[in-house]
Length: 456
Image (cartoon, rainbow, N blue to C red; front, side, top):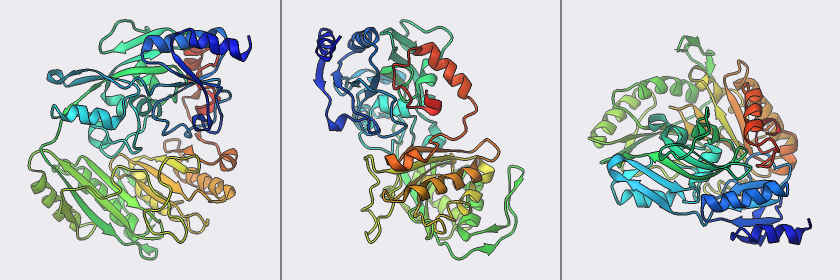
């Protein structure tokens, strides 16, 4: 069947179809057509045509993270969920909301705020949709208190590769026996099916919020007393940043003042960093003042504000040479170089004096931002960083973080030439299980083929 016949078959479903353009590329791979369904049933109709003609499919919502992950091995149809942008149900009395996958997180927040409620997730990429939030598994500062999207997800509707509509959790109509679809699909990059809608557990909007911020200078390396955390002794050679953060982590996160998030912003690892703590709810201002006193003992003078720092809840922004702060890329685009680092608590402070601190020696200007409480960081490099240096920096970071199999370094996005030299995902112990799940859900490798670890 030729291209005209395939397009006719797609249009016969009643779904709007157009020819793909440059803006529809998925990690540099351009699809042939874009389908714009308006319901799970229309997604299913498109998937049945794709199954009949062996067409590979990638789903998108806001398009903000189409350049994340590996390029698909092939991409014939881009299923654009921008028309699926309705809040289907908001049971305010039950603190539950069900929204289509194309609803942006910002639009959902506005709708929930009218009832004094929120989905307690901070999404660091503006324009992210519900489907994109789940597909990439990204989360922001308050993951420390409320968890990630998979923790707040209580139900999901998905369309599988053969056009089957499956539902799991809340509002159950049909289940796929033996599988928790919500947990499987979160972070799957669209390789198992297309998310049509999701049901989340909500929280009341906090009565008040306050942020406590302080800046920690970074002088030359010095010797500090050994530090023991969770039974592990850290290196005795450290910087003042690392030493201060070592002490701050348990002092703040284990405090009865109940912080919701503890974030660090380190725009240049050769310079100072800022630590910010969020407190929410009753007596937030008073608790923030108490945290000020607590932090003064380990980090230095702090201040309380009712507004977050300008960098709060956003990905790091690499400095462009000869440009002032705030003019780096930091946004959406195929030129980004962005890594995600997940670490275990006792090695957290050491990570700041390992490859992060050695970035200058490697001639890499790294910017670091992330959660001191949840131990998840993002590292951004200038987009013009030489590919060999990107690979060397990533390798050093992995050597430092993954030696015992517990730390993880994932390359979320990088320019094509740099990406060719990189293992995007590093070691994944559950790879064989992930491959079996892929075989179960998509045996013909039709959904985002090759986007995930191991070419899944």
